[in-house]
Structures are given as C-alpha cells and as structure tokens.
Image (cartoon, rainbow, N blue to C red; front, side):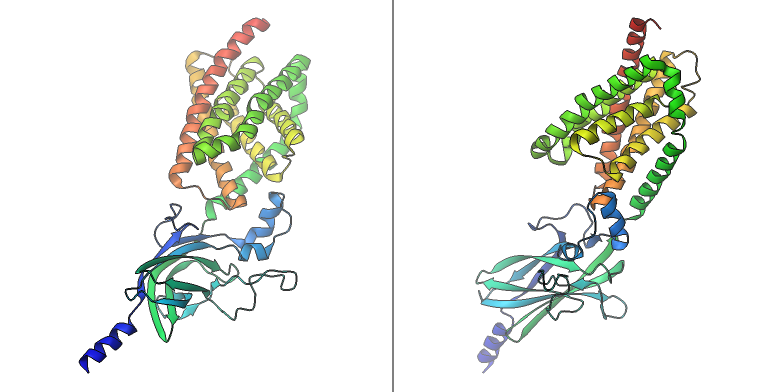
Length: 401
C-alpha cells in the first residue's frame, strides 16, 4: 500500500513549472531594452496624434491589440516524459490584495466580421491564455506572447500569476512584474520640437532680409551648398543606409554619421564663414529639406519638426555666442564655435531620437543614446565644423573677401 501511495504521488507531480522569464523577444532571447520583470508598453493616449504626425492616418486598433506587448519563456520540467496538451493562463495580480487586476487580454480573431481583433470570442477576461503541448522531453521551453489591453492597463508593480493546468492538475507560479510606459521624455521632446517650429515660423519673415543682405551671389551659394548636402549626404545615406544596417545592425548610423555629421557641418560652417548672417543656416537646411522631400517624398510633419529643431538650436547657439556680431574669427574662437556646434548637434540628436521613440514606438537603450550623442553629435560634428572653418577661410580667399 505505501508503494501504491508513492506511485500516485509520482503521477500527481509528473510535470511542473521550473521558471518564468520575461521580458524576452519572439525568439526567447533576453530583452536588453528593460530590466528583469519590467515591461514597457506603448502609451495609446496620443495614438491618433502619433499616427497623423508620421503620416500613417487613422489608428488600426485591431493591429495594435493583436501585437504582443512582450514575450515570456515558460520553462517546464517533465520527468515522467508525459505527452499532454495543457492550458496556459497569465494574470496580473495586485500585490497587496491578491486580486486579479485588469490589463491582460488574449488576441482574438481579426476579420471583416469581428473587425476589432482584441475583443474576439475567447471568453477570457483580464488574462492571456494559450495552449501548450508537452512532447515527451524531460525539459521543454515555451515562448508565449503576452497581450495587454492598453485601454485598461495601469502602470505599477504587480505579480504575474502563471497557471498551467491539464488532466485535473494545476501548477501555479508567480513572478514580479512592473508595467511601465516610456513617454515622459518623448512628450517633452515633442513639446520642445513644437516650440522650435513656432520659433522658426515667428522669425521666418527675416529670411527675406537675409537674402537681400547676402545678395544674389550668397543666395546661389546657399542653394549650391544645399544641393551638395543633398547629393553628398542625404542621397547616399538613404541608398546605402539599409545595406549597412544588414551588416552593422544598430551601429550602421555611426558609419552614415560620418556623412550626416562630419560632411554636413563642414558645409554648414564653410557657408557661415563665407556669408555670416542670421538665416543663412536656415535657408540651407530648408532647401536641403525641400530637395529630399521632392526626391524621396519625405514630406512628413515629423521631418519638418526635425528640421526646425536643427535650425532653432543651431541658430540660437550661434546668435548667443556672438558669432554674427564678431569682427574677426580667430582660431581660438572658431575652436569654441566648433565645439559649440558639436554640443548643439548632440542636443539635436537627443531630441530627434526621443521623438522617434515617441512617434514610431521604438526603444533606444540609454547607453546607445549616449553613444550616438557623443560620436554622431559631439565628435563628428565638431570635427566637421573645424574642417568647415578651414575650408571656409580658403574659399573666402578665393572669392576675394
């Protein structure tokens, strides 16, 4: 009889949950974008605004809700090598009360009849469900998508209760989970961009005076430099950027940054040395933006915002540093201006990347953002500006000014 009891005990625990790991990607690899147990979800409050700014039109909510917020790895142990179909269920649990909280859902069918795919007819409320199949191996890992109801989920610290059941057995494991929305800096960046847009619009009437001041030769030179910037920077960056991304991944921007940082600021500073007047930089950026828009169809509100951020920050720094009022441009002062341009471009890089994260729902790790600000922003732009100062002085001698 004791032997029979042991056999019953063994059959009762013939499979169990070893561990639950999240967040991971769809291949089960650890997600470097967040700490252990932290899931960043999109903020849908401004979803319609975000889509219109990126040129996507109305929000496709069924696509939003049928896209997993993250994935988790369910590591199962099966010492008896059982072959069985089991039901998986994940719920958000309030740490204080132990109650099931709203926030999780299960992706349902998505067709012309149901239209809204997250509603479905699964009968599951406030939980993500799935079916898993034990295949007779002693250990087995399942990568399971976790779906979030963006309209009801709240930020905070929870316990994620994972329940696996089948054949009258039920195994439960809880792991800490933090729901977070990464939106504060993104919103600040967008707000700052709109301030830059308003500032550019407010001072746009002065561009006419700038054109009169630099004359026909200056206007032609600005157009020439803008065309050089488009043909030598925008065109090759757009064409080879995707190819480099295949080989270098997220670090491809450090290569294309040599063009978009170093060469661009060489042209900008050389032009400013030749024609030192407020608005020259704005004119060059505007012509370059128009050329890129006509060639590639990049006329998006976000592109306009990014251009205005560039123009507003750099024009403000040049004006505040006294660049336009100074009589002589000595080497020491030009070195200061070049470093200032590098700092300005680092700030532009930060604002534009935060905007991209907000509008395109991307995520850049802090170290990656800092690397781009340091290399693409400060280093490349400062070197380019210094080369531009030397090039500008040589061109000035040729032009006889």
